[in-house]
Image (cartoon, rainbow over all chains, first blue to last red):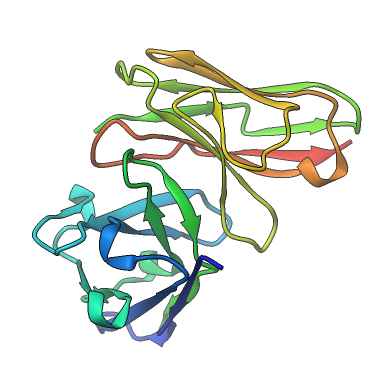
Length: 119
Length: 107
């Protein structure tokens, strides 16, 4: 079964840092572009960024480029999101998603991990 | 960045009805448009890609259409499991952007 499982969310103070993980199983993780997408409470979906299979290309949405770092470890079948200088507006459910091999939409999503920024 | 505008933001309908959700792109995205369904407390699920191609396992009562800047998702004969939120997303290069969503509720 193809599966993505996020972890690492929790309560973080404003200005702090947090690293999220996404464990992949059931498919050849090393062949796929992977993305992070977030959803603030009661709001819509916001794409954060993506990383290509060999980590040579990482794209971010411009407004978040200086806040997040995406990385991956193909040996561990794991995607990461390093968050820094967090603010209350970063409170959200963070999803990892698999981009299809031949096109740029998302065919597999994890269940998400919740990040709450509060003092 | 390409902006995606969805309408309506919310929609109330009854089982058996037909509904249409629209999505407008701020510039030409050809047919690079996907639709997702999100049920309460769940992650988004792919419904349609390339504007009109149904994802695997999606019932035929769903259909997508459009190209360029105007797109729509039509659901024929609504079923109880169809209620939830729907999002469009352009997949014409980065940054990918989503529409604001349409919440489909039971009347």
